[in-house]
Length: 190
Image 1 (cartoon, rainbow, N blue to C red):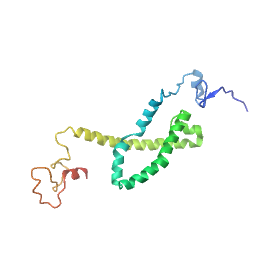
Image 2: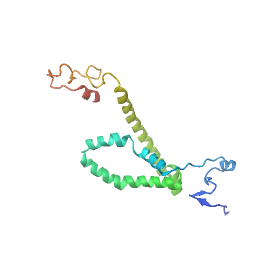
Image 3: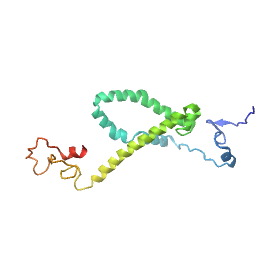
Image 4: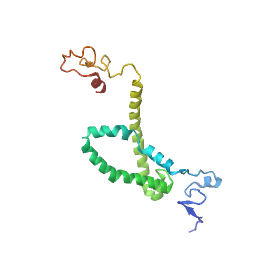
């Protein structure tokens, strides 16, 4: 058994900033990059806030509250948020700050068996990115339709409208005799 020489260690890394698990060829050449650090606390806080507050909080949460019972949905949500959401967020932030590593390699530093947690997190993020792309596509669709002279769901006469479509705000809105009449908005979204 041979003993390896090790110098002083600061924040889990040798004092010269080299990664002890890195490849020996890159260490011999000396071409490695020092990991960046936050300049101040405000920079870190704004970065974390930008990651947390997204379209899901602004757009999706009020819709879910309305759809699932309003206040009856809000109470379990707050309980889950306080008991699970905040502790897991604190764990991820503290682990990232402590190890100065990314989402996969930080778990490897804690325990090599936990590396799968990092990979699972990345897979979940990939699924969430696909979900958010669809939400952003709808937001862009609404944004550009706001600049048209008539919104697509504002009147009848489109290829998706049925014979039961009645424009309630049009000229003949008072003479509605069809019992199965639907609005163009309902027909556009269904």
